[in-house]
Length: 174
Image (cartoon, rainbow, N blue to C red; front, side):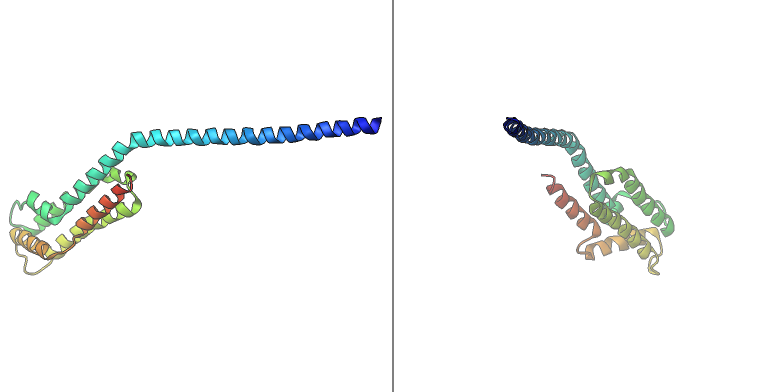
């Protein structure tokens, strides 16, 4: 009789163990599903709140690349006097101020996009400095004229490339 009781006890124990294991598995799966659903909801809410901010950042960076382009810069910043070095400094200071004003936008874009924007800025400054070093440049008006003439010869400016990257990255948001 004890063997029979022991067999029954073992069968009850095994069946309880199996039922408990199945229940644990389903409970664990259900909890994981709820956590995943909660994470998706938080992510959806986060995107809903941050998307307008990110769009505004891309808009500001597109405006920045346009304002840093030599054509736009030279139309906005005209020589005050004849001193070519003073005009060079004024142009570079304007570029730096525009860039510094938009530094915070880098947190909303990829590092590749931000690096291309920085490269466009640095290329603009380099172009201004290089042109001013020419012996043909005698005054601020000649510097401006030469930069404008060189601009017409240029096919793809770094600012145009930066704008293309901004547009491409913006498309990935949608």
